[in-house]
View 1 (cartoon, rainbow, N blue to C red):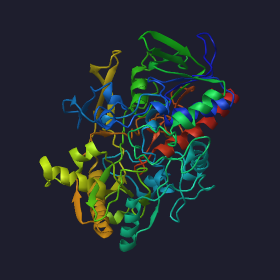
View 2 (tube, one colour; view 1 turned 45 degrees about the horizontal axis):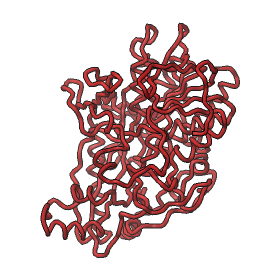
View 3 (cartoon, helix red, strand yellow; view 1 turned 30 degrees about the vertical axis):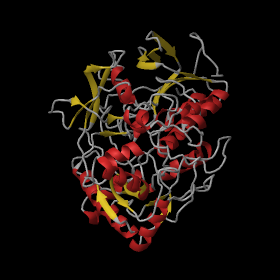
View 4 (cartoon, rainbow, N blue to C red; view 1 turned 90 degrees about the vertical axis):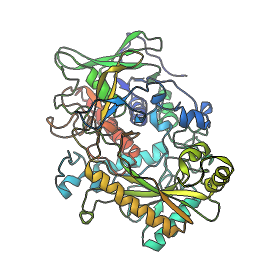
Length: 548
């Protein structure tokens, strides 16, 4: 890659661990602001032309995900249980652009209530429910920066939170499933709206428009139309002449000096050799799992329980977002395997309503998340033939005639839901693996069951000739890795302050999904990037005023 390369003895202002949704934004903002930046990425730098539509490789062998390279995560429902190897767990991409490369690109903003639900509702037994230390109004300008600098297609709806600027691109074309959602909404008195997507609906910022290939979720975009950090942020960072993205660099420790300040990071290069990269300040943006592991591994006499962990909350309060859905077959072909994941969504049930008897809310969109192999294995109703000629006939018919209404839901922060180090299961470098301890809060399960009833009602109203539900399940992992280094004003109950500065280390910043105080309603990436734009502005201000 044509980028600046810093020598071992060159001074740099910031080392950023991670190049995903947050890390890419931070790298771009700080380097274009005139700071010298090195980004440490433990995976390779792949270009859009290298991405594949091979369903077996992507969805079965998980070549885009960490599970293909570190399959030995463990899981348990409570700390009193023995941990067992888990087939699901903590899912993310190790490569330049991180999980923004394979995300579905739903770009919902949080609403004002998301930041102050504790004040609105009060405590929830068995949870660490709390307000954020910032408000929607503070974050709104940075949501708008995401719209315009990352690239989002959409159209505002009457019920949307206030925005200071329109979308930069018109909506993507409506899909058959979106039309059916609109039909259901009209019958039920609901209010459908455009699904905002971080996918180009037209040529934008030098990148092409969506080719409607249908391979968004879990796949990379060979058109460069999906607005991942790989194509929207990292090129601008390296073009500044002040940013190096160092690939195949696995950071295993943040170094600190006798004064308790971060001095740089230790990492393994692609050949497994230990290296050190010094910097005036360290920013961790490695995702809610890797960030927690790195902080817990960075022990010292001053930080015996892990770096920035005086509160004991590093690794705690992990949230994934719940989901529930109903599938239906329709009389006419829908051909939902084409185009982006979703085009329309209903937000009527977004807010939590005490009349339901539990905490929880979310949005419901229309989608069909299957390739032909996955649909053959998991998509058909269970009472249909599973082999032979009749199976083939059913697969041919149902694959082109089916779609799903899917709920994207809240997930309460619970202190006993944790990521901890598992010394019995190590990676190829000898790092302890992850042990995930997780049980859905009872309100999360009630939310999922309630929303599945709503999706079934919608499917019936849409006119499906056959409707079937997939059983609501208790989560054992996911792709939304939130809450393991939460932000807050009180150092006793949070890891970073409202500017993402670690309470314990003045020149250490953490900015990614780990900072979330509550989970939102299922689509966190836009908020992660808005937080990163905001954090970068304040970090630059601190640096210029010599506060770091």
